[in-house]
Length: 387
Image 1 (spheres, helix red, strand yellow):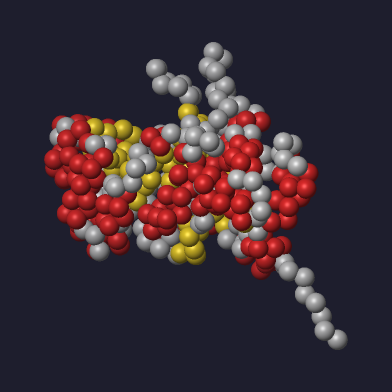
Image 2: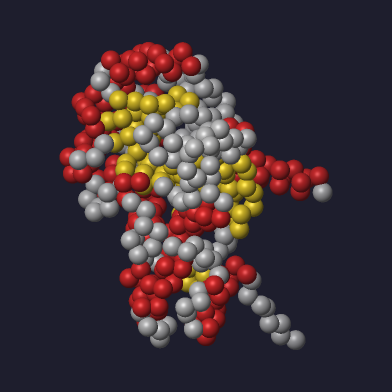
């Protein structure tokens, strides 16, 4: 007897077109290929990115027959949220997402109350890959190895998830009764799992989609791409018309020290990296942020601060250092003391290098990229063993 095997849910999704991976011109072309009018794409784009719907049945200005055809042939980001955690102050929210092939990624929403003349912000920290190929020793994701690139739609879906949360329940900072609730995403940073410039094509596609004035309409200057220092991709990015921000994961002021924690430095040492940054600045006229994770006793001494100041001072006002006390990870690094951080920053100031310190966010929910996935997989393995 011949047995007919029904396609799995994953196979069914793979046969569908994920509309979140398409720019508006691409969606128009897809609609025409389906024998539909191109203007229908703009209607769907508005439903997805402005009204934030996930169900074609809610798109009531489309004919019912078209809604059914879309449900049969297309999807709007097929992801499953396996876990969602909120920090005690509700200023950090983290989700663990299972993709259609079972891969796990993380995404974080960071909420900032208004400060001085600055408005409240809602920033999504987005993953660009499942795992990472670059093996930075202080990063939980870097210790996992590389699984695969995320598609553009899987990147976009992370932002839309939190956009829907805020639309449904606007956030208001506790203790600030006069502050206006925030009901939309204001910024995105590609600093989650993975190396964004390793997945260059899909990352830029996602950013163009989110930037579209006909859709989500997030300004390019509110988007930041972080990289471990892929020199050719930095130069390529400098030629893009999209005015996004660039952040370099630096984390050490010398080749010897950087190569110990960031293997990529052996391929693209600091001299080449800084040259690419200078070319980027010359081409764009934009400041570059240098992310510097402070590791107690490893890269946070006054000598390290002086070396860093000497390295970046030639970039003048176009260099800014973001000092980041390390989160606790399996690698066993410790954050420096507050006094050590103040001393480090004071020395940078003496060199004329602007700097800031990132407030620790979400330690109670394992907010650093890779930590929640690691814990989830460890519990899953323990459950299998116990059963």
